[in-house]
Image (tube, rainbow, N blue to C red; front, side, top):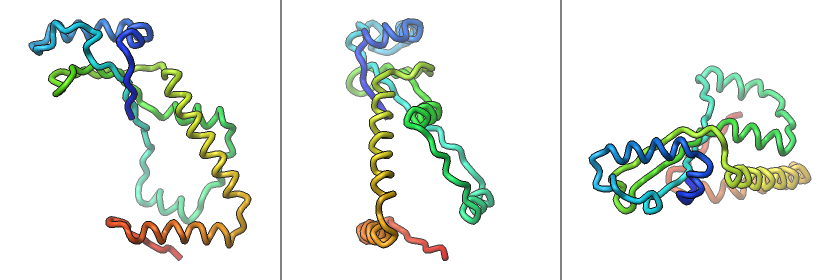
Length: 160
């Protein structure tokens, strides 16, 4: 995921990283090496680190599922943010002749707010699903599967 920020925001939040990036740009052979920092594209990019598992571990989790932990909204946000890897990207406009990526530790508040909003929506949906009867839930799942069955690349496996 990616969120653009201004040079001023990047400089205010990460002065050392910005200075390093500009120093590297000035030393490079890029045609943008003399560009003003304000003309460069500054952005946060992040991805979620997912813990992998082996095939035997996956089968064991299907056969013997663990009870789901009940977490508060803040615990969910903290867990989600803790799985993210965040970087500060600096790119030249246009064809991206030069780019630099830096790892950043502090999660910007706008990204935390975005994660919180998504988790709140998930919690509302979970509460809605909890009120459904098994027949209603089955009908809803079947309706969703019916939509997916017509799409290319969908493969359905039924495990008894």
